[in-house]
Structures are given as structure tokens and as C-alpha cells.
Image (cartoon, rainbow, N blue to C red):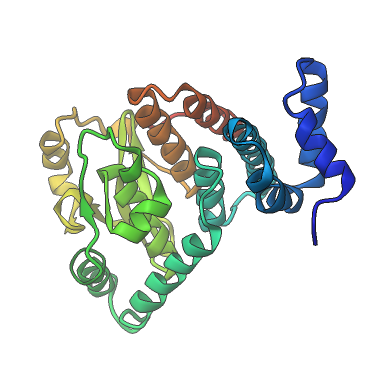
Length: 284
């Protein structure tokens, strides 16, 4: 299937000097959806004048990001949205050219590998210790870019493939894979950060996990020491176990921080829109 006459006309109108026309073109392309954008990228852009290609690609990137934001907004209507899909959409808003096949294939392959080793017959501690071994040792996820300056170490699709990322993104991958294999690991949030916790069937905390120490298990008695280790004040009244939705806000906040450090204002604006769609609550 090749682009129809309307699509070809819309491409040339993307650079119309009238902003009203450009907005109308954008709205129409969003109505036609990602399939139309793919056709333009496949057949029209390669044949365009070199001087215009970069501009066309930039405009299409914004449209793809807006389409992904609309999809994320719809997904969030579900009280418990699919975490992998939501993380993918946020990644796509940040980088409209992310490869969806590789993203979901990476998650599936990793979760399949982990699922083969854990089971309901094992205790929570045994399953988490196995998970930690697989995640940090066999698969090899590691913390890089601890100052969180590099977008390549922050975007989840890159981290899933390279196995190296900043501490927040590695933690988010940890949550994602733990949930995918049925481990009830959730974020215990506090102003400025979070710590993974393992919940029992009644929603009570069984134990805590230190991602900075390869998922080491610790109990409430040493929680104060954990806060001292990460340079924060321990205030039990500020601690709250959040659902997986909080992880989405954390991801968007992280990306906004990294992009802001890099002077990428376009991407910062996109991530702030994601935070707004999430309700505006912040965790970092």
C-alpha cells in the first residue's frame, strides 16, 4: 500500500507558512493515525528534497508523540493499566522512533527466562533471591550514569537492550520484570524517591529491597539505616506504598530531568505533558 493523494498533499502542506493550515494538517494526520505516518516515512520522505527531509521528520516526530500521548491517556482510564504498554508509550513520547517490536520482545524474553526459575512453591525470600541473581548476575543489569545525565541510560528501550542504565531506570525495569513474573513488588514512596517493597496477600510489607545493593533484602528495623545510606532523612509518616501507576510518573519525571540537563526543551515539554496526564503528582 502506497500513500494516497491526500497524504501526499498533507506532506507538502506541513511546511505551509500559515500556522492555521499547519495545525489542520497535524490534526488530520493524527486522525489518520500511525499507519498513515508510516506510509509517509516509508515512501514520501526518502524521495523528498534533502533540504526538507529533516523538517518533515521533525514534524512527523511531534505528531507520533502526540498520538502516543493520546493512547497513554486512554490507557490510563483503566485503574490498573498494563505497565509494559504504558512504559512503552512514555518511551515513544520521548523518542517517537522507538522500535516497538524490540521493546516488547526484550520484556518477553527476559520475563520468560526468569519465570523458568521461580515458582509458587518457593518462599517469597527464595523467589526474590533467585530474581536478584538472574537480574543482576546472569542477565547483568547494572547501574551506570549515576548523575543521570545521559538519555541513552534513561530510556527504557535502550536499557533493556544494553543492560546498563541510571539507577532509576534500572529500578523501573526491576519493577516491570518483577510484575511480569508475578512477584508483588511495589514502590514505597517518600518525598524525593522510593524503595521497592514486597507485599503479602493482605497488602502488608514483608520486606524491603535495596536496588543499590543488587536487590538485597532488609527489614523495617534497618530502614532508618537505608535512608542514611542514600543521604535522606527518615520520616515514617512520609512513607506510602503506591500502585504501579506511580512508576509511570517516576519515569516521566526522570526523563524530564535528564532532558532538561541536556537542554532538550522539546522533550522536557513532552514529559511534562505526561506528568500532567498522570494527574500532576510527583515522586522524585
